[in-house]
Image (cartoon, protein in one colour):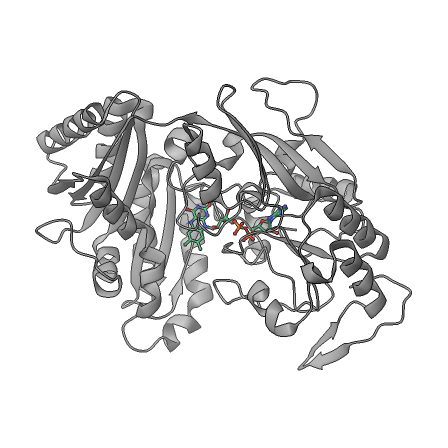
Length: 489
Ligand SMILES: Cc1cc2nc3c(=O)[nH]c(=O)nc-3n(C[C@H](O)[C@H](O)[C@H](O)COP(=O)(O)OP(=O)(O)OC[C@H]3O[C@@H](n4cnc5c(N)ncnc54)[C@H](O)[C@@H]3O)c2cc1C
């Protein structure tokens, strides 16, 4: 809600919800900062900014601002603070928990970071890159590669997601096993605080124990504490050889045993270890153009593993062969396909990266981004599957994800045919999944964050003391509560 003495106009009643758009003079003030060409006010042009992927969080706004400089972001925040206007930072709008869209009040302004899109510098000697928040992840990776370095963060959404969004959601992805989450890749941040002050923390230091490390407050904060405008990130050597294998196993416990063999042989060169059930591959074969089964026979479960070597392709391949050899000897591997070319490896990754998309034509689905300790993944899968099938016997669990870091996307597709009973039981199903997660002392928000979707669940997974500390931090940094209101807390 805007706190301003200017008389409000644009009040509209939508059903029971009352919407209040910012008054014209305030809108004009914001527009003047970025220029008319960079302020979106036409409802048709605003629509894509409000459309989030899950379609679960209908929001409203009268204004999208697209600043190009830190000074403009700072001026926007100063005006927002002065007038108590809620600001919703938005990157590539690929978030999955409704964190990047405003609520339905029409009182909040979207701050789109896409025009802060410069690669400020690449330093191959220092193994760092400094980029503005609106550079998409794939472009960060390409800029690093051009300088002969690797930026390892890898997500299916990387052509659209922006580095500011990745940092604000502490994105995980498929290379966490070797390189960590986004948090582990950030050396320094430039942040505009809610009042407009700028923290210039773009330091490229590997060691710096001079007081509180403020950058960590903003990483994973989902835009609730400040606006990230630029980041200095860690770079790595580009592996000289990468080998990829698609491996069939009988059960998740066998996949876990194979994971330990792979870690033992490849160590930190094991850069990915993903898993998926047969039904996920069936959905890909049914709905993904050009997809083919990599193996001769159908199998219950699959692992996609990748080894990256600093020496050569032959060395990466030798590790994969050794892993498969031990896996066969231990009776864990039913069949395998090792990619013979980068094209073939890409086709295998395409299957893994398409799982969410190919669930869509199968009807509605319930999605749970959870994590449990790695050793408990097989037991979790068994218990969670049993729990949901007890509730809706013909629903179709499609659990997949990052076995190497314990992150399971426990997705469930509706039964074939009628979705009504399934959707009627949605809350009970989700509660059942989370109850199993809690039994394993897991997380109900592994990598996608809290946003709007999981806000009500936070008190179940964070203690009173933790929540009170979060609220105190929020109150100190954002006393007027203008940064991404209604998210996380
Ligand atoms: C197909 C697909 C696959 C995905 N795979 C993964 C995956 O493997 N791992 C994973 O972790 N996520 C994944 N995601 C989720 C999503 O892509 C990530 O969370 C991504 O990091 C979001 O980036 P974005 O730029 O789209 O941010 P948005 O969706 O635009 O915003 C996300 C959050 O960050 C805030 N924000 C954005 N920019 C800024 C900024 N500059 N300053 C302050 N706050 C900001 C927003 O307010 C919001 O709270 C996937 C999504 C899709 C659609």
